[in-house]
Length: 266
Length: 289
Image 1: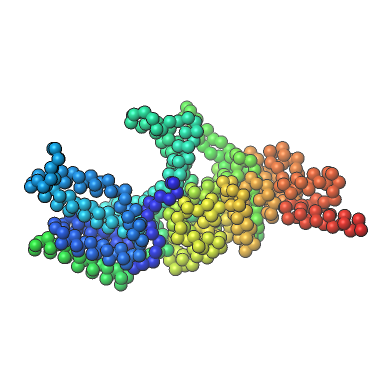
Image 2 (image 1 turned 180 degrees about the vertical axis):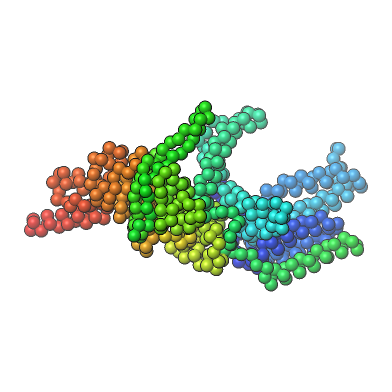
């Protein structure tokens, strides 16, 4: 079960979206999220939806992967809908005991749900079409102007790369420890919250120790492969700002302009 | 030509005891040997015999407490030589999981060359040829955690090959693998050696040492036996005293000799034993005619 986890859920492919410069994709995603909060009515969301739909179609990522990214946050979406539906005051259109649904509430609920769904799918598209290493390279490049004020951009990116790589390894390790402790009679399922939290200690302590051991092994292996920080290091897939990146940037700027103008003028 | 030259190597680990006072533990106690360019050297010994410590001294991950290690004439204890030494001597470690840096196979193989500051096009060429060399070309876009232990170890070997070293030190690369993974790793090491790579193969499986040019037996930080596999595995009693065995084929052929089967003394591998037995069988059939 632990083997199928898709963190850093990259969907391998060679579409135009996959080949875009990670820097462009990261910046565009950040601005897209901001844009979703600038939008104030449904016409703005139509623009956002059309852009996202175009990206999905171009990326050739099967919809079930996109759905998979949305599934874990469905609860949050439903919760937001419920809270907005019932809590906002206005013209009552339906009532049951102390619960009442208002027209304004319903509208806000729809609005928030669309905003959240677009936001999550938008950021999922970034991770689905960009390999983890591209993401960390992109973040490193975008952060590197801050090196001047002492931000260790390369080191941060390397830490993210390693964290992504070792999530499955540590999950497997956790699985092993849980089974080993259960074989010795540990009980993780009964009792109140406090007791269950206490029962986690025999998992966490060995997990920490093994994380340190893995870190030590990995550091040794990295040193053996001549790792010495950022000095003289090159990249196999160096990032290039190509023609398609320029076109994508222009299309995205048009979208931003539409959203902003719609907000200001209408 | 001597590629690796170890002279009176002593290595001590320093730990602190419960009172906080430093205690030193001598893991390697005066070792000297040489490894010829293009040869296959097997180092065997029990757990705690100093094998891994020795391996880490061969590419400057650990530096000698006393004595010298020369790689291609370069003294590992001179700081300026460190990168040259590590580029010449690559390493493959025991745990296949804990030596893979990146979440994509080909990016991991590229890690070493990237550190060396090589041109991106050249890195691409090296990564592709290294992955083909270990027959993992089809897996270059995969995530390492979805591969088997043997496949992960092949990725680690590809990562070493991509640095284009002259020597690869394998530090018990088969200890955590199933029999199939062990065979794959050993056959890749032999194939590399056949193409001219100097190989130092540390193991506690005697069968894996049988195909080496030179076998070094370590115990308690010192060299107990040294020579060709024939010379070393002939000394069964001494090996037994060190709690080490001999390859199954050596044991079986010596037992058969004791029972009067006419087998040559120099059998090391299963294939050689099978061949010798077929010959004995053939002669018996000829006699009975």
